[in-house]
Image (tube, rainbow, N blue to C red):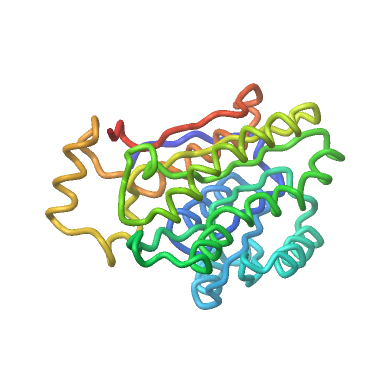
Length: 251
């Protein structure tokens, strides 16, 4: 494992992460804890949340919440704010890349996918922005996806929602920039989370994907977390309204 950077500007900073109990989100939670930040995360999986909190030995706070319920999401953010202080870093990580055929998509399914993969990103940003303004600045990091850049098929509602994340990022960057609130998108390639391994990783799919990457190595969640840390830190003070690719040069 490489030796990674420590960012002094992240120590004691209040950080909010959505979808933090597993996968990329869990790695992001662990990374911020390692920086000495005050970490709060939201997830709907109570068992995974409890397991992570236990593993972190009290070094993070969490709320159980379905992010599709905006009132519940606002309440969860309020509860974490009461314990950790107003977040000056928001990581909009939560999403699900369930596969679906275009022929089978109904209006209700389309709306549910957008609620799950896009809508909460805006409302989380809306909820934390006043506190960031009062603090004199902050960083909002939205998780996008390389799937639509690659013209990936088999999940049109997901790829459409993830493409829209980039528009949301740039719009928020413009609106919140005067308050020194930065907003960026992190763009993962195919990341080897346990969910991906359980559902879609086979020798054939790995071989095909590696041929599309410039780099030969598979992408582990830790590398997404490291990019998020950089964008949350003062080291990236002049970075906003942009995409930061962590996809091993996938084409």
